[in-house]
Length: 542
Image (cartoon, rainbow, N blue to C red; front, top):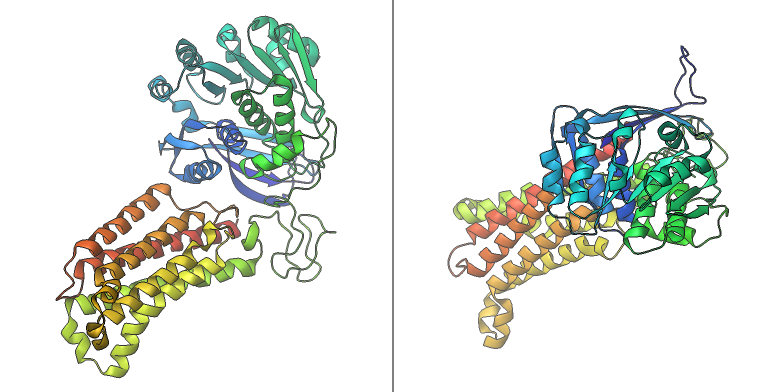
């Protein structure tokens, strides 16, 4: 797991040369993290063992968003792994890594991680972490299919027990470092002799990849793209290739998928943010080898089509130039979807601020009703009525609806805040009708629908639905979502509110416990929305 600091330059500096950067960005990265995310996005079931520091939490969140199981990742190290990546205009790059926390993974961590693996599962290692040799031996002893991406290549790789590997992936430079042979085809033959029962892949960058499985030889010449950034392309290949192998595809089909994933990753900036979705890879891998791939639908990390500030058409301009309309420097897109423009993000921040105001107002009015009803009834009607109606009935549902309207997610799940707002409004409407004089004269079967417990349950379910929708508010934007652990804790609290609604005595006193638990859920939600807006602001300032 690496914190990738990507600096774009016109040309890579020579020894002793200082160059000015066009732009600087920070991304989630690291070979293991990138490959895990790439495989998960291509449909494989993936979990990862890793180690980082508190400042690499956003990498874990990015992995979760990609669909990777992260429960074996610890963030208690003093220093996270980091990489400084320089990317030139043509897409060439130079990388310096500081592995740090990655070198402090212990063999006990690996053995714990492998206990949950089943015989025949694929375990993928890279050479950026500690205990490589011990980990390979432990995985092979459990009957797992052990694959190694031998990068970065160093002298320690000569001690690897290659006969224990099911597969090996190297690029041309790594193949030469291992074998001393500059010709990729001859290097492939040497590596295949080291692993007579395994599969060897040598990636050739824009020329595709070649493979050996026993005496059989395979090749795929890749796809043509106008590269923006080649960082992470090799990781995208490895993840895509192994996802196909895990799904029972043959080597030829796996090469096509790996090359498709790698080529698509070159179209956007960054490592993990550039990884393509499964649908993108599926569409590309069906094309003939050598076909040219067009621009990707998601521009995250690429050059924007319109200025972020004034939305002027800048398709003819390059990153680092000034917008012809407003003069703002053109930067790679840091956001996608509805939040691509600053106006869209500003609307969400306004909605989040409205919710942060509505939640405490609800808590205050609830406390007045539950704990000091006399004080509330002593207020002038001109103050008490608007306060009660606004605090209980209107403010929170309106804020929920506003959050849903401005959220990035436009799918069916993205409509959940709207549904939650309607349910909450309906719940308090029922609670209001229960206490009207005419309700007592209604038939018993109809009064059953105006049961206060049912109204409170509807409100609790509305709060739970809103909490359930919160992790998806930022889906597809590049902004890390809220923590799943906190989201689950909030859902548990909403469930407690529902239980209280069904069991608290509402015949005499206001539902004190319900108001308290409901207020906590809403205020916690408001704090999580604040965290999201802070992440947006942090990404805007990079």
